[in-house]
Image (tube, rainbow, N blue to C red; front, side, top):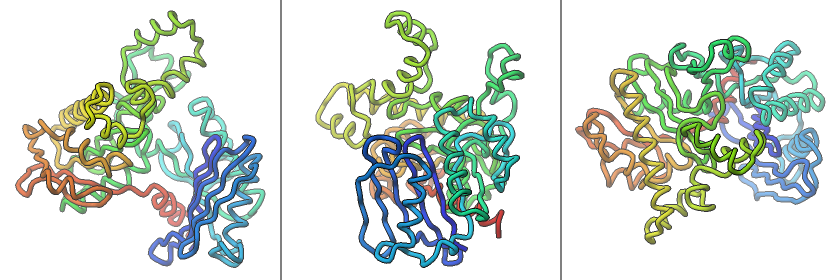
Length: 399
């Protein structure tokens, strides 16, 4: 079974064509950027063939998906002979609210329920729906599955997901912690358990997904019991350009001082803060590490603050679960920035987590155990694959 995985953002589409009958081989993958702007970009990478790149206007998501499908069957850069070889399509959907606790086959009822959630993710859900509707239009009859970023966290208890605001706002507007990166956390936690020789159904794992967007998840006996992102992806860790946890009084002060309205403040906390704000424009952890090594003050602050925030959450989630058996690092920073992993783990010996500095340095971008042989708590570098999770869920539902 060949499954097309689509991740439609507000102005982008990431995709992979995966052959589930051939060890989930990625036949092709690519990215469309700057959709709806004056000039778009399309990068297509077919397995075993040269990369294809073109700049041209991409007016909307339907036009973008048409380009993807045409590339997949193209004589020179294609990997299939006919679009009928695509057996199903799996979509990443940013938010499932309290309605969707697992992945579902898309029908008119499901689409209507997703539309009700637009207020919870106004930048992402419209794009997700455009992807679904474009596929319906171009390949009618092809089964489509929605896989939600939030579903994995629907096992959190009330005391973990409710906010200390008037309860009426939960009842009327469903304002609560939802968490994100659920697809990634759901993939890496059992993978880490297997690598560490643990039973996922009887273990306490802290999953650190660290990238430009970053979140931590407490996984107890295979289920999410708490996570750092909240009602939106702004809460929790310091991120590339998101502030993470912050005294809300700071935002009120800045809004009044700068005469900002809600839209401007939303842009501020999502785009102007985090590593970007601390350094004055540097968001890539590799550049921050280089700046720290050169003795630059603000890059050093950014590096140290990022590590400290992650360390605090690890301690908090160990307390919330009554202990920890494994700590895993995934995502662009988690998998590759070994210096960050080292800084985060320094001082966690009291938990029984002792990092092996040589193993850690050698494990950049690879799967492996990076704790000392006698460390009671295993520390691991684990590569994530959210597209594979979407393909697996799609396969399980439509096969």
